[in-house]
Amino acid sequence: MSRKLYISDCHFFHRALLKSMDHRPFADLDQMHSYMIRQWNAAVGPRDEVYILGDFSYGKGPETMGILDQLRGRLHLIMGNHDRWFRKLDQEHLSRFVWAAPYKEIRDQGRHVILSHYPIFCYNGQYHVGKDGSANVYMLYGHVHDTRDERLVHHFLRQTRQMELLGRNGQIRNLPCQMINTFCMFSDYRPITLSEWIELDARRRKQLDLEMADMEKILHPDGAGQDTDSAGAKPSYRRS
Ligand SMILES: [Fe+2]
Image (cartoon, rainbow, N blue to C red; front, side, top):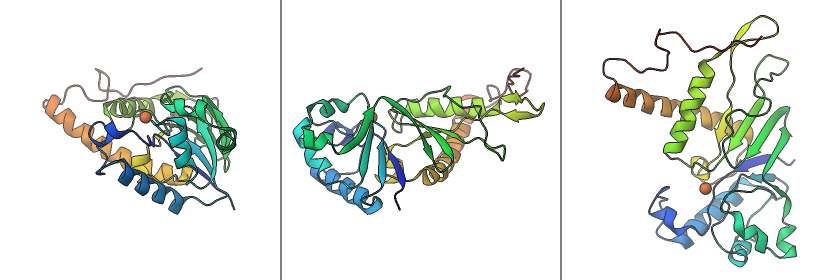
């Protein structure tokens, strides 16, 4: 049985990421590539559908084809800002991709999935809920890696989830914000399923909450500046 798997920002051939930004724990590119290829192929079966959410390679066309030759799975590419190599592929390697696009929406086991290299803060279907009343639309993104920008996305996500929404049935519920950063280092360079990303993302965001709470204590030891408005109430947005 084939599965849908997701990963972003592999950055093959991007030497600078060993020393800055990601600080990937490898001595050189050869070591990084052999580890990443091993991890990929341990996680992906030949019939699995792999959705790459951009920045697959920083290399040129021919060297990137050498990596593609070694990876399992049926590939789909969401174009990132570093995916210039894609335009240099020969016909054989172009056919490695089922499609390549800047943005897609797909279905995955009854859930609706938004795919974009860049985080989309107000994504299509954000308000939709499934039959059981729970949100079933997920916005998968890359681009920000594990940086300060990812902390800003997390801050937005927390603020959004605190907002209250008046539904058509008259019930008040919280505004869903199911944005998941599929950065390859979070999954130890393995493409993984949406369910696995949901679990991993929840664990990681708990850790970010603790980090932000610590930072809040340092910045505002008197308790001012918390995630509430000046009256101490949760922000709310009522939809008529
Ligand atoms: Fe990237």
